[in-house]
Image 1 (cartoon, helix red, strand yellow):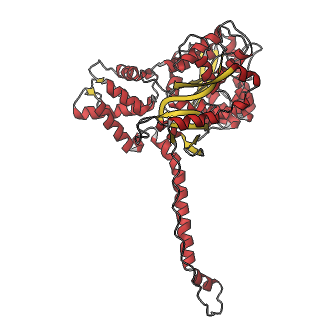
Image 2 (cartoon, rainbow, N blue to C red):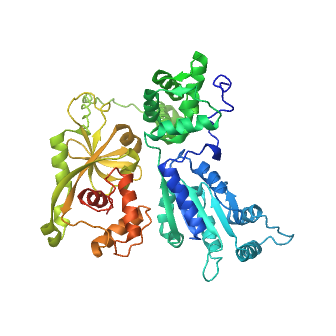
Image 3 (spheres, rainbow, N blue to C red):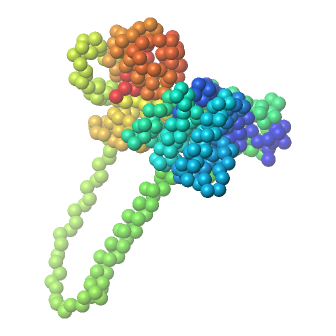
Length: 521
């Protein structure tokens, strides 16, 4: 509608996964590098995870343009299939002709194996890519694992990429998935864009759509877009598309903060237009249905009680006798419901409670002699809270507790699947949801840790290095836990430090160690 007005060849903010529009942010570039590395080096299994709308499907389609002609690919985008349907779809994608009568599972696997051996003998490679892999059934995942057994003595005949939402990581951690999980040698978790990437992302899409620079967004508009989207590409597309429509209606080629705010209001007013609203509403629908059912039950019980005499007479008539009415005492007035204690704590209360949660008694005597407690603060994106294993404080955002000008904190004792367990002002546990945490996140978090004099650096070896390597490996960094601080470990330490805003010197100093300790059980 507005493309001609802005001298664009097409709509730059469509929600379809067009690989031409892939913006290679730091995270998207690293994800693509992991994919190409795993495929070209024949690592077998690769897992890419990321939240809804982070660009996983677009990344998958863009991957194909980076592969050479010798790599044959089979893309499975329908994850609600059976294991037999999976084999049929794979062979169809690879162009393997199945003659009539070759319909058994063994026939499909044998035909696939012959194709893979022929491709390998010709110097080629084969790729199986499954999107939305979190929806795959256990039997289909087991079939994919069995497909990975098609190999020579030295090389994997097929490279398998599982792409899915964060739930995929939890599925793979299940004991029944252990054999599959242990085969995944390359992993990457795709994160939302950084605030400084928003301008580059929007301008990239405008250029691909044929823009010549006469349409621009103001600096405050970009800030507003990030505040709404939190770096999620799908939400960025939704708000930018709406903002261009509003700008077109107003006859302007400059998209200001005011226009973006109006676009956000429009999206929030109509949940069908908000790409993440349906997911939120789906979570709320079940409690609403339960409430309606409860109300219906109460009404039915009330009606039955008031007409109990008539109902009993109809069911079993009895001789009527005089009944002396009982005089019941007047009902006691209901006690006022006690108001729950505040969740947002002041500096003193939050800090003293945090010290109480930090159980120094569980440390060994050796550790107690080598360390002392320290308080450390980091600026961490809200989505990262799920990786924290020990109690921490969230510095509540300014809009969350406007009743007080002094700093307020949300004290988290334990992260759960649904959100977290917080500690209120009376020291009681309170369950809070993920949305509550994200809404009140001020980006700055703090916790206590055991300060050690140990500094790990390249060339060192020992149990401390091994312990550090294992945590990095569990977080998806390409580190082999050997106990030796080699070049590979140094590179991944630098990447870890950059991811979390630390000085990227490759040395595991106090702050890097404090962050790693927070990620350990």
